[in-house]
Length: 264
Image (cartoon, rainbow, N blue to C red; front, side):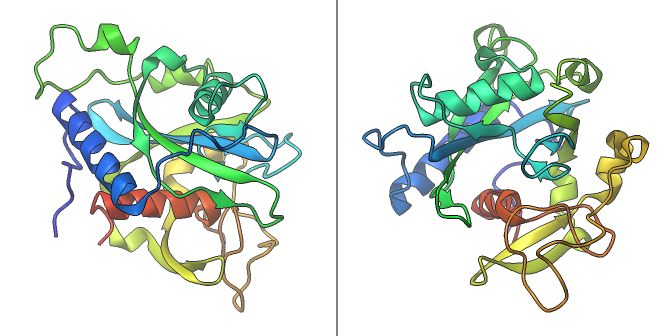
């Protein structure tokens, strides 16, 4: 089975339309669409899974959380965080947090849909709502001018992005190409919450190349919450000296990649 979208060619307007249709179908068939009646409380969080082009290469933008943060410091995640009472929706919270963490304004995000359903954290006091979008080089309206549906969308500049990230919240932001995601040599099969199979992804070299080596970012030496006798429990950095996308971030990424048939 081939991926629904090209994994080596840049995202195009046609690609984004395909993603919208696929995500809408997945949400409708599984009844995953966000319930507008769900109260916006401090017990909710929202994240954005941001697709983008970098140097004409399609991929996903991820971040390593700043080491000064009180929770999940040094771990790989999507941009996102708690829903504030000032947020009009879960999506608004995801866009606000993306702006605060990566410096990407909401009008640069072409929202494509959602993937889910939302998962509850291990403590049972936080639901995490995942949305999917594409980061444009400029505002979404301006980006669509004078383009055909097969034209590659402009790439974002990672150097410029790095100058905009919040250093207190993000240690490093990195681009994960779809072709890298699709490489079985990087996969490790595990169980999410001890019951649901999903794919863990080794991104050690990607993070190191993006600046992780300079910043001293490595896998957790103590493997807290993970050892050879236990499955992955939540969000974390990796195991056996590897930097991996696993836990809740890995679950949502795996779910999305399976929907797009990138993971077979």
